[in-house]
Length: 219
Image 1 (cartoon, helix red, strand yellow):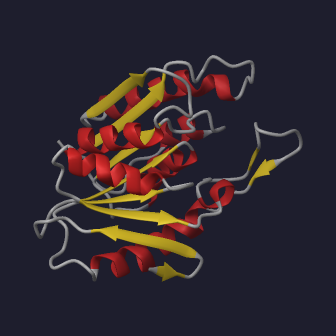
Image 2 (cartoon, helix red, strand yellow):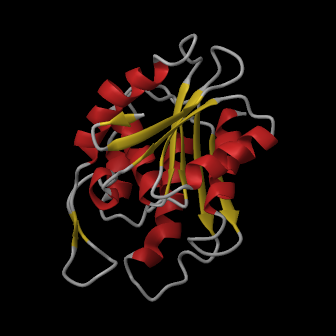
């Protein structure tokens, strides 16, 4: 279905009342992740949202872009989160025979950054997975350390390609250290926390990594 500029695809669970997982995507990895979850016997509702302005909707606040000189990432995550929780979520769940047993949020790269940010700004989600999350993002470690999630979290899941920090880009090279600090912060607060290192770099096996982290956070 189309909601404003966003493309929303709902893959409903076979059984009513199962978890609902909200996945923000850059490309077509949503369908691939859904197929992998089905193959693994995971019965959850997967809500895939595309058509995003990736470097705005997923970004918590303005920051210099590490990808091209002189560019900026424009913080539009707060506005998009309102759209997600007030418009997309209700419309998606109207299509289900019963409310979900729980809600989780996940995403890859900047989508993983947004998933982390979302649980600090909304009580809609009780679990999240930051899949190869862009946790190099300036100020995100301090933000996590100085704030508390809006709801009690049952699980926080982080994964990262083992080569992702092996770059000459000083901003991007901080990703592993930042992710470790953030994961440690969740552990210290008593949240069940996973941090998994995957083979390869940032763009390897995006759908497979996403499906694996969804399975991990729902177990």
